[in-house]
Amino acid sequence: MPICNEYSMVVVRWGVTFEKIGTKQVEFDVSYIIQETDIDPKIILLISHEDEEAAMKKLGLQPIRKT
Image (cartoon, rainbow, N blue to C red; front, side, top):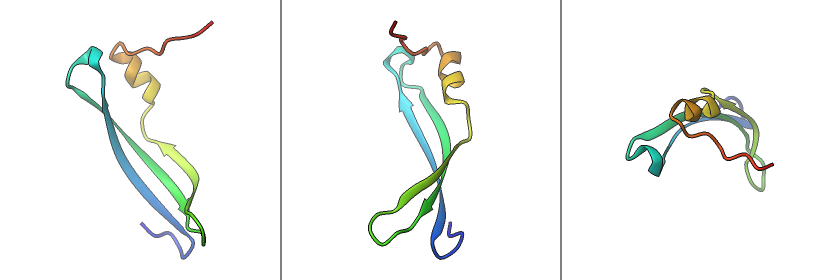
């Protein structure tokens, strides 16, 4: 979605599966504000629409903590 000549918003839905929970796909929505430059586009802002860590903990997918 264009915001102006130099900036756009891109909304992405991505999903991942974990062996521990079988074939159920865990999905998340993320919005990015992109600055369109002469060389490569740059991500200026990222907005995660869900608390990804909380969602994975709810499924029993807690990250391994190194001490």
